[in-house]
Length: 276
Image 1: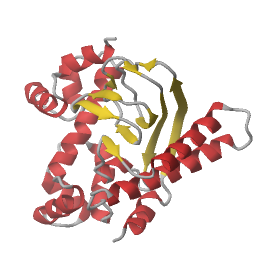
Image 2: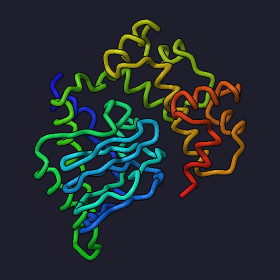
Image 3: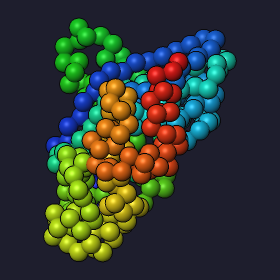
Image 4: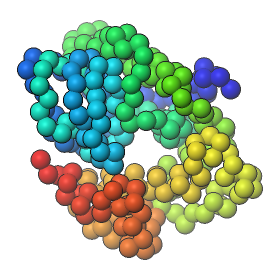
């Protein structure tokens, strides 16, 4: 299936929610402190070069044309002051496909990209930020959402041309991802997931591997860790309670999986996310 057909399947009827957008310009320096947001943070760099620190990825060089797409609850920011003129646009949003699955579970995107059409993409992002900044504009919300949807389509198109081979469009994979959104905390196995969509375990594993490059068990684990991040940051529940709430019966195993995935322990993640 070509990219346009894949996007038609994934974005037709999708629910996009733009929470905020802004254009940031500095003449002498910029220094974004480490922070964590509960939504996707799309950052496009127009001018300026430096280093952006992303939890789990480390120090990443950024410059004009860099695009950062940071998932919810991932700590990030510049690692020190960067001198010189700079401009960047930040857009915070959530996106779910028509069946309720998270769009970005179906597109295994990179956190940091360097794509072509830099000026055109940045101009698109600036228009979104401009529209967002003036709440008095008639139809502002409609324009912001339509422009953001178009920008995301362009980014996925360019990303695909840049080396991404597949996007998950198989209905059985999408149905499993949808059900994992709500049923991640239950006693799940790959066998049970395969029965949801009426295929064998080996067939489901093959479908996931060809679509996402990972198996259904890893997709379940990723969903559980995503929810654990949210609970660790948004509540004061003890780590053992968080582990059980997201489907881990063994808190020690949860801590090992969390550390392997995020790079630090659940307690350290909670502490570091709250530190300046």
